[in-house]
Length: 315
Ligand SMILES: NC(=O)c1ccc[n+]([C@@H]2O[C@H](COP(=O)([O-])OP(=O)(O)OC[C@H]3O[C@@H](n4cnc5c(N)ncnc54)[C@H](OP(=O)(O)O)[C@@H]3O)[C@@H](O)[C@H]2O)c1
Image 1 (tube, rainbow, N blue to C red):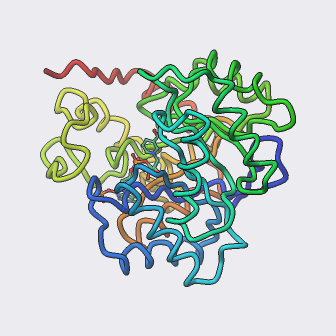
Image 2 (image 1 turned 135 degrees about the horizontal axis):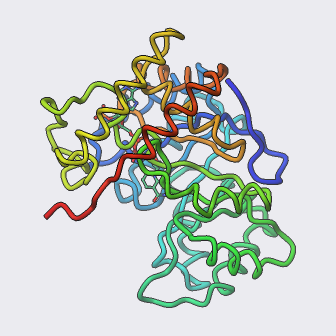
């Protein structure tokens, strides 16, 4: 496994982490033993970075993750990142919401607390919630502060509210066919020492090679409304999958491994957190790190994926 520093902190996290939104009704891992086997395999293959959120399964994901890490006896060896919803951002709600996360995770501290999305209707002043988070760092309840789905302008203003702590990360959608992060947030992260935590790094499974234009997911889960699997969009994505297969064959790697490797190769600021529904998927995804495709192969993927235009206007 390859490790990368989280922002300018001294924490080193595996370049491939584990996303655990899958432990929820949205994705379908609702049996604790299944979730535990996924976490156990992650530890076995060298993953030390686990992403969850208060909203995943309305707390189920945090509960399963915390319980599994405790039973495996590895809490001190891993980095837990969780998130407070953008509606929980009054000072009072930051403190109360964090307490609930700690209870569900069964831990006395959270390594990385992220603001899940910028407040929308409630208009909480940015400095109110950033300073509440800073207060929690001073109390030893959280170790580091991160954001999620914040555009550069808002990252900048949130960061400027902190006086004694640094922001370490912004978590954004980033995969080979949804590359908006390259326009602003990655250059900003490179300039200011932030980590970019890439969510949906496999485009919700569209880049794994197991789906084809004639075999799309059954839409039992959260992908039901995803533009990625709309036939007009997926046809274009499949052209990228074919190149992923071709490059992977040369290295004995799968399309998923090549797709994740491409993101890690694109910027040193990137950490990927693919979700997994089985231990086999975690093991495969961990194999995305620790090797390099050639620059020509990287460029070929850069060019072909750059031509994909995912339209969200599908109805
Ligand atoms: N901050 C945010 O706003 C935000 C938003 C979304 C996600 N996230 C985080 O990012 C994580 C990952 O994103 P995501 O769950 O949206 O999508 P993803 O990681 O791109 O795709 C995950 C899905 O792909 C399939 N898969 C994974 N590994 C595979 C493999 N090796 N071979 C074949 N199929 C494989 C699995 O589904 P199937 O087997 O059913 O195909 C899995 O559920 C989440 O768990 C969550 O922690 C954050």
